[in-house]
Image (tube, rainbow, N blue to C red; front, side, top):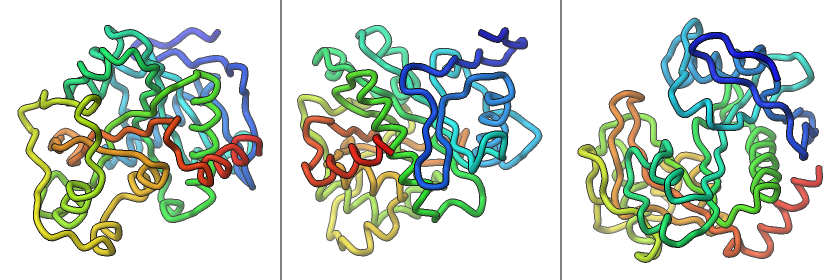
Length: 259
């Protein structure tokens, strides 16, 4: 395994599922220092608005990092980080646990796969091939890790709640998760999802595409959102219980994972 330079997470060797091709895109886990540099550069451009910086944080060392390219050695087109949370201590100390009290999930003894820092390069944000490739990668990792749930923070760009009222009302009316599993408040920036008349078409139109994707897999969200001024985002806790994915959608995911 390559050694890390100071302050940079170690790259992970490719695990059993290795790299694979989905359509015209190549997907794999970051397996070298150069791969990790590409991941952090892409994240810096997307989340920090600069190409010459880094979005490195203290959680990167504990994670695997998915990297999508058009071909071997080509520029990074998308990235995501994954972390298996199988013990109560790891659940409490994960990235999502900074913002949400995950005590109920920890008590459930479920195996969680935390998904975060999903980012897509400029010019590819609306490309359906990228979303299919991300779905294929997440499905493969969830199967390999025997995950019961996929969890994470689903972000809206812009920390002002007024910008996202239609989408948040739609979530409150239709997609709040079961009380036995959903997180309690844990952040000073938390607020209840707004209630009121909900227009499904408007709410879905204003919803981030990745969150729509989770909801299409039977996913649910917390009953509150959190403002994150550091990244100028607003996010909700989102979860997909793998056993509850609709059969038709599951068949599509399994086909993608066998790409």
